[in-house]
Amino acid sequence: MPGDGTTHFGFETVAEDEKAGRVQGVFTSVASRYDLMNDVMSGGVHRLWKDAMMDWLAPRPGQRLLDVAGGTGDISFRFLDRAGYGHATVLDLTESMLVEGRKRAEAAKMGGALDWVVGDAMALPFDDNSFDVYTISFGIRNVTRPQDALSEAFRVLRPGGRLMVLEFSQLPNPLMQKAYDLYSFNVIPAMGQVITNDRASYQYLVESIRRFPDQETFLGMIREAGFENAKFRNLTMGVAALHSGWKL
Image (cartoon, rainbow, N blue to C red; front, side):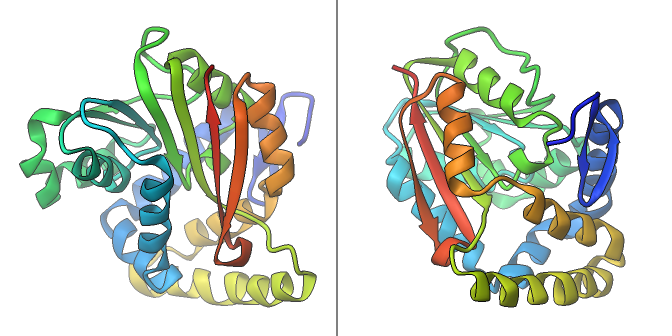
């Protein structure tokens, strides 16, 4: 990671205080087509990854979830459906993503069990020990200082609380990684141009995936934040990974 008050924005090095605004610009631009683009980019596989996340998480009735970078509510809807009853707070830096989430049919059905909050993963507007579960899906690589976000996750979780992170990751086989990179850098920005009329935002998203730490490095960051019994599981050979940890 860069130092001296700088960080990555894709393959660019930018001032730390500039990144959040640029990320917000990306997601404001793509908000209305975000769910469609996820389906196209992954061939719908992101839905299977989210289901795998819920399988490992095993939501229980009455739990309180904080879904950070929760965008259009995909994870929160799944969580509440699996739990049977409970409460989910969807937090996102980009208000237009939350607006899209509120429009979804699931949001109307689960309205009383959902809150939508504009906020920053590095400075959560919640008391200590407030939630049973903290999730962040395809969001932590967009945070300016991911270690700060993990520390905040630890703070707001109750003792016995669970962290789960779903994020694009690195394939362990170099040849497979090279083939995946060819697809990512050549196809995904072009798809973004066609579907959202925004090539640059998807170029950033692809670059941000390559900048994100590998599975073992990120596991170390979770442990550094204080989480115990931390583990990860690769999904689709490492295209994505699930990381889990407990506040014990």
